[in-house]
Amino acid sequence: MKPLFVCLAVVAGTAAASAQTLSELLRSLQTGQSAPAPAPAESPAAPASAAPPAVLDTKPAFMQIVTNYVRATNVVVVTNYVVVTNAVFTTNYYNAQGQWLQPVPSAAPAVPGLIPLPATTPAKPAERDPAVVRATQMQAIREALAQGVTAASNKLAAATSFVEGSPVVIQMPAGATVLDRKRAETLFKAMNRTAQQAVPETARLFQKTIAALQLAEPAPVAQGDPDAAVRAFITAEGQNLVPQMLEIVQRTGAAAKVNEAYQNAMLRGGGLLGAVLGGGPTVDIYHHVTQGLLELMVKEIAAEEQRIRTDPAARQTPAVRETFKQ
Image 1 (tube, rainbow, N blue to C red):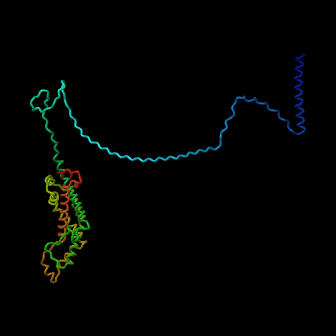
Image 2 (image 1 turned 135 degrees about the vertical axis):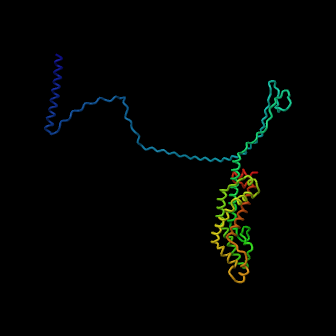
Image 3 (image 1 turned 120 degrees about the vertical axis):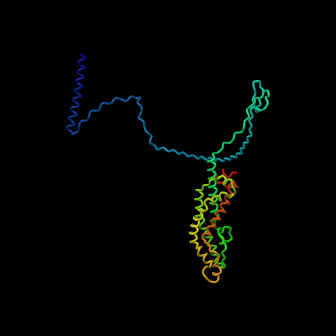
């Protein structure tokens, strides 16, 4: 009887619950309200051992680094380091018995305990190729002359040259007598202005001619007198230089009006003074200035050549130092 009672109780309870739910539904329909939703089933509780979620720190951070670093270094180093080496190496030879063996020439008489050595003669220095020697001498002569032209040009083109009282001037033509002092001064200034203005172009002409200079035998010139090089140059190229220099002087003389000054000074027109001077020699004033300029150039080049031959400090190139070192 007990199982039947239990079953009836369960059924009765279920019916009561259904009736209660139905009555609530009816009441909600009457009142216009929805029936309350059934309570959700509770989820199972989380285990007690689970860790809480991580929380990020969003507060601003500030960092400051201050460095004060001062380094002062005062270093004074004084070094006096002198090394003097006087080393002499001597090698002594001994035989198996411990006897000192002294080398002697083979011509010496035999001495017990000494080892004769063959006589030796000092080695002769290798002879230089004559063609190389000749080429070096020719190059040295050209370079010495070129150095002389540069020195001459610098001196003759200076403001203190070709003025009255200077040793570097073109003198009045020989045999020419000028009674008018003012006209004589005008002619003197015109001649020297002509020469001075011709110096730069004349120097370039000399340099160009020297660069192509060839001598059959440069050795006598290299070993000759203090002015041997410039004399050999003028002998070989003088006939070609003078006409070209004359053209230069004629151009600079036209600007300086040297011919007009000469004509006025000689008074070849008329009058008493003209009659007195009219029979004098006629001078080609351009040729006179050209000859004077050539003599001055040669004089200054010769002075520089002598300095090169006597003063080692004046030798500017290896060929010149090699050739003129004697």
